[in-house]
Length: 108
Length: 108
Image 1 (cartoon, rainbow over the protein chains, first blue to last red):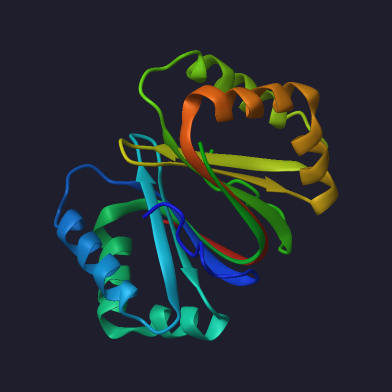
Image 2: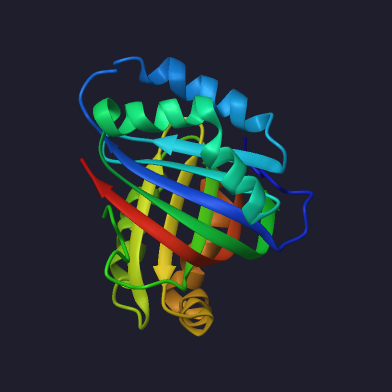
């Protein structure tokens, strides 16, 4: 989903999730798709962008407020995925909560 | 570079660059590596994280201030790369300037 939150005027919020995976899928792909679907139904969700290569994965979700981010963090199905992530899928990860102050989109 | 800006207490700043590429390399790889090297020598640079798959590329650079971001944007070698990006490498891209309000790092 390129150009997520394109129609929203800043400020809005972004959660930057970067991770390094362990070897093997172990149910990751299915759960990952499920989480994107679930997130997109949450109140205040504005879009998601994701890329992964051999070294690193980056997923950025966009939200209308810190309250919406908090609700998503505490969603029970998401909590199950978070626990599984810590136990099985990730070697390490980081989470950053950011306020998007300005944006520009370019189409060539 | 996972855990970029790990030793820096928020707030600091992030530039989220997402893009879809045109077909073929056309000098992209060499220029991309050169830009990372150049950025890392700029005043106020705190780190960079990047991932690309078939659909999307995401690069996030971290900075100590909006002034440092502005200086990097106006760096002359970087400007040449920006122009070439618009002409040859990208189908579309977006740039978001964000204030990182909090972060957490996890090692399993």
